[in-house]
Amino acid sequence: MTRERDNQIGYITFVVALLLLAAGCQTDPSKSYGTDDFYRPAGPHRSTSQFKTAQAAAAARHDATLRAVHFDGDELNSLGRAKLDLMLADDDAIDAMTVYIDADDAAMAPRAKSVSAYLTDKGLTSKQFAFESGQNPNNFHPVAPDLANLNRTDSGSSNSSGESGMNALDEGLGADAAQSSSMSQ
Image (cartoon, rainbow, N blue to C red):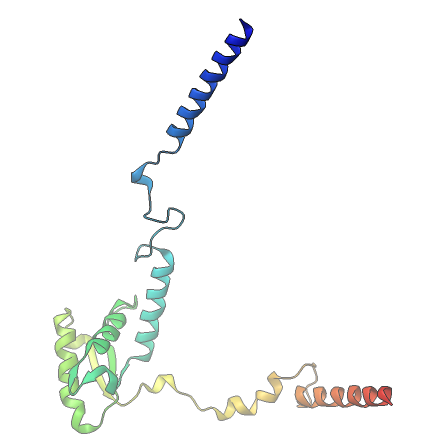
């Protein structure tokens, strides 16, 4: 009788385990993120997408220059519209946004008219934007002062005599090279 009872207990244990496994493998579709349940899908709701958009908008607003690639002839193309959209997406106030158009005098007026029409369609008034010819001068600075100070930034020592860190490195390599050549003889 114990053998028969052991078989019944084994059978019941097997059936219960099978039911638990079958019930445990079901998932709630409302909690699923898609085909790959481990990662959420990409989209504008993710913080990385929001960060990327904010950085691109700030960069477009800082540059603020439309070049020949932003136009098809004198009409604003999709690249130009995308750049203007990013400039508008920047969280800075739109008191007076200056748009620089890098074009010769003959192309400046029709391109400005095209950009003006686009910005007006986006809800801006003519007082909220202005046009300048050429590149944004705030994006450039002379390189000569930076080059003059370059040797001070390369210095590995704290000396203030103006000796380049590269000179000190060269001297150190010279001593090591002399020592290694004497060892090889």
